Length: 101
Image 1 (tube, helix red, strand yellow):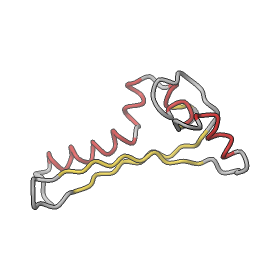
Image 2 (cartoon, one colour):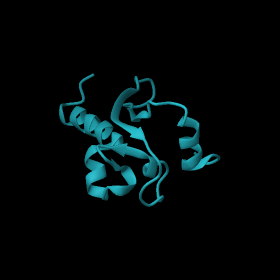
Image 3 (tube, helix red, strand yellow):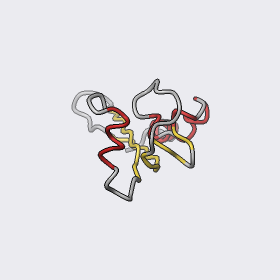
């Protein structure tokens, strides 16, 4: 993204009809040295669109979920559906469930 920018990514995708995308976040947790790392993954399906909204954070202006780019959403709304939230929610549920492997 840094070298080609939002417009560059859209230019690369121009030849393709399918602009679907998936935002993925993965968090790892380990009890310490010698313990397995457990992974908690969140995914949000969307599509790549021409930039809309403020360009404050990475690819937020070009990732659209249900008609709005991440950049167009207010922070509370975005955080409810984001891939990071979903991954952290899985981690939270695991911790609250007694951290059973």
